[in-house]
Length: 634
Image 1 (cartoon, helix red, strand yellow):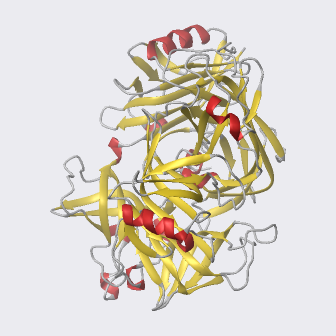
Image 2 (tube, rainbow, N blue to C red):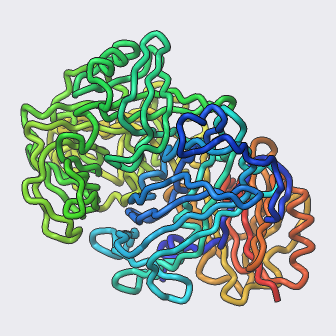
């Protein structure tokens, strides 16, 4: 396998982790407070004696394009062995939906206690997994998930281990937050030479009470009530396009700046709450916003409700526009959300969907409150949710292109993510070599028609991003760049893209991954100390995994002129872990981690290591916010 593919096929660390900010911890159970006997999670009359656990799902950035699997159950366990179900209904989840956000999946009443463990049950029998493959003309390949011995997975129980210090503490009438990060890249070794590709799973769920990486949160569910005076509304939590479950009550706060789309009409602030009131209890809602860590108060930036919710009264698709021919859009890698979800019509992924739009198609845009947009605004690369009708339903992902009718439907344009390399910087504009749009390689996009003439169509080798007054002092020619915004109106390029946010990748998270083969190595580092680790880049035991991924760039560790220094960051939350076959130890303090690592390396070989943080290419220094090493005991 070439470097690009092996970089995408990283098996980093086998672990299930739950931590908050604290020192090192073993997996020994903490006795903790005794659960309140009068709190019964099944009896609302006792909820005043309960606390609340908010469960969020997210995923680290990786190269899986689709990863849908059935979650059978999720339970938490107290120190005295009591088990509480916190996701009490089978549900299907596509973890790749959660790279840029965290989904609130549960706000369940639970007995006050210190929770020390948990279990999540997954069923891969009907899973749908798609991995990126740069050698394939379509840029992807379907995959099957197996265990490390190559046996295809069915139902799998994964144990969640909670750290001894700063565990999940639930107190009376208060909420605590638990974020589960299904790090797909860190937990799979992918073999693209097979058809379908084989993705070997090593259990890895990073769960945190105080997340190191904070993301926007999405909450979904039917309306209970809207309170205009209090500037909030209450929902029954119902994630994953679920139509019947009730995973607890949750308050969504709004401000005067909160954007609403209710039944395909735009509002803001209190006007949106009044529109919710008029829509009535049971109206489906989706909100995206931020969760304040001090008091777990959620404030929405944008709210969709009623017929504006995908799949409520019409079919919907979510994906990126890769080509346009007049009023026909080709949407690649579409998630199809049927209006009436059933066994025969499940939510599913499809390769390409051709969508017909027309003069009666309503067009909305995240962050844009006017109603004057037309279908001309929809251009190549745009991330979209489209509501309409799929005349001939199919769940065959490889079936020929299917037609989706949105001529009397609606399109919502979402913030779209670019990555590439800087060619030049001019006042108000940056030219880049475009590598990917929303993690899909630029080569699959047909930019025909993006300009008023063929010679003015967007060119991925000279892709022009309007930056306005954004500060770009840190950017330079040849550096990796990320941009968030919207493609220019179709037929109006250049510029090709309106950048709302443009950043140097040295200022965002990079990933480091290295493996030392099935037997590991005695000498992964040339030095281990409180001042950092010095990775031995020329170690002859290094296997196919040896890279730093900085945005669109893969840096081969074995080809660098010097060995890579790995340091902890100076401030902020951090997480370091040491995993062996029978134990897991977690640290928020670098010195404690190093002391354990020095002791543990006696009588053990290093099998693999991962790290997330910032990479300085000039000094060959990786500053880690998260790092884990997997040791093989001899």
